[in-house]
Image 1 (cartoon, rainbow, N blue to C red):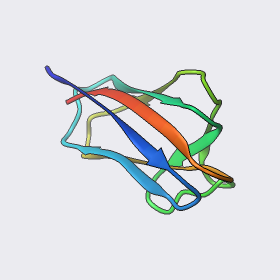
Image 2 (cartoon, rainbow, N blue to C red):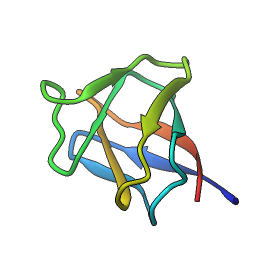
Image 3 (cartoon, helix red, strand yellow):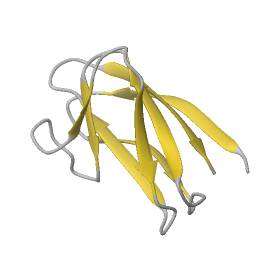
Amino acid sequence: MAYKSGQVSVGTTATALFTTGPAPVNSSVLVFSSAAAFVGPAGVTTTTGFPVVANSPTLIPVTGAENDQLFAVVSTGTATVSYLTIT
């Protein structure tokens, strides 16, 4: 089991946070954003995404059934979105 982490600058267009192979079953992704952000699949918007509150870590469960890919978007400006996952 290995960990993968990174930081991505996210703006008003959906931006890929990470792509990883199948994760272990019952795994999670920890997401932290410097400004309010919304996460979800490709094409996520501020109205369709799951909200991530600024400066508050959010734990997102993943099943490991398939490759994991998560995108983020903000309503204005940019945010630094950090993630930590198991690969």
